[in-house]
Length: 449
Image 1 (cartoon, rainbow, N blue to C red):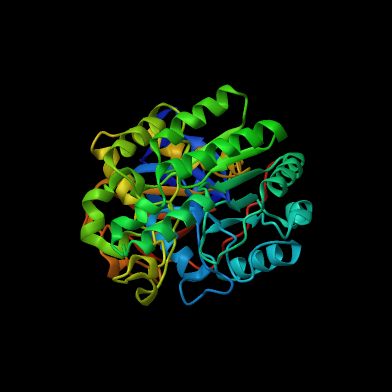
Image 2: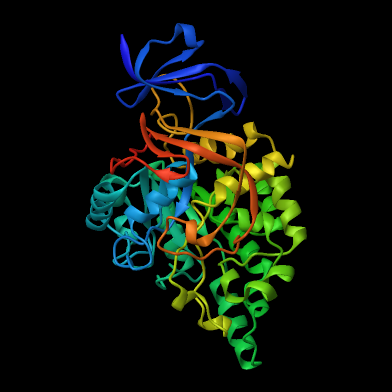
């Protein structure tokens, strides 16, 4: 037997341990694991001597802007940035134009993505006050889950009222899927924005003051109460508050199936220090917060309460992003390509183990979004996705080197140690040494329910 590919001489890193073994891939699936001498012959051999072989990274929160906002990003450029960072699968958000809101728009999003993507992908359907009757048809059309914006979002999608939200949760519980929540109390943030504007505040710190931690915490608590009442599985997107970690833990004690993610910027950037330096470049919803929150979020990653690392990759052009008046600036920046080296650097600093990072960046995202064991693991029968990393490779983040359409990042000039050197999607090398070498071949991931 001759297979398509084998990777030899590497250290295979899984959540439960690191193993000196090789892997073989054929027809897009893992077909053999073990000592190199026991692996079949292969048409392509990658020698991973000195390298760490990880399951393919999953970024479960990206905005690739297709359709409708392709001047910011599209699935071609976004997925190129993904594979260049080491990401093999993404989950794309629904606030496009039109929103991913019913069977037709789900199918169109999937069609567009498959025509452009260099990595595999899932899509989520939006829940608004106007489409509560579309829950089941979106599930049938091929989504991996749902999203609801309780806080303000790019595109200004209307939040459901609480009654509509509960109705949607009851239906979603029947599908077996999960709903992710942008957890901010819109009434609180709108009130504070108007108040700060009336005071003449336009400085960068005013943005964080308009979206306080208690606004996010209230929305998380509300989701827990409603999930308990309906049996829905819920997920908190881009969690930025330390108190959120404790709320997630309490929700689980109550029997709620609740998960959460956080992002590198909520772990690494202190708003009090960096907002005056970076200005509107640092504007993100929810805002980056203070070191106290960082420490509690790290505790959640290590000890339970935060399940996934995800980026909220949110590209914009400079003319929308860089403003002297913080209220005129749009929120977000690209992150799918910069997050992996930033997190590998934290491993090298001793903040977490590489095994734990694999759990947070591979296995847990797949489990949360109904993609495991197709994705997120190295086992016979799973998709042959690998992120091969040189944990000693030093680099410097530079906006102009990014493969996104958006060449803006608050991490400009940050030094990193640890970098993906191969990205393999279902047995196809899509990136080597930081540059794309593959072709459009991404496929939608079918939910495993």
